[in-house]
Image: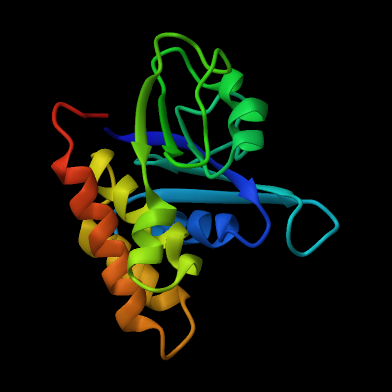
Length: 185
């Protein structure tokens, strides 16, 4: 894969924007790609809808807005229902297994991968790292950005003192994705 148009969406407080920042940073600073990031969020700091649009390409990016993402990472039901229909017909939907219930909100030809990110984060003792679990799963599912680049971007983006927890969350998400059979992007 040489490029991806990624929409990461959920509620404020779920780490949606940080997940987008990490993916863009991993691609553009720690790997060999060009990347753009556009973020949107409601007026409340937590609880309102938010999204990050991340475009990653081997070639320079002329236009940063995403109309039809090739990948949607949905942290909650509202994000799935709002953005699922926008996915490209051959797109990939990565969603929070315990929160999102699939229906006809995405094209029938879209590949889907359920990730129990919240459950994995809770097993690690901090629900707050569900976004890092999801980033780890993305790194294992999508053959685009190297795991090493994603790991460097995570460690460069998180608060000091949380490195061990976030590294474990990233590794668990990655390991989960690698345990899935016949999933490719």
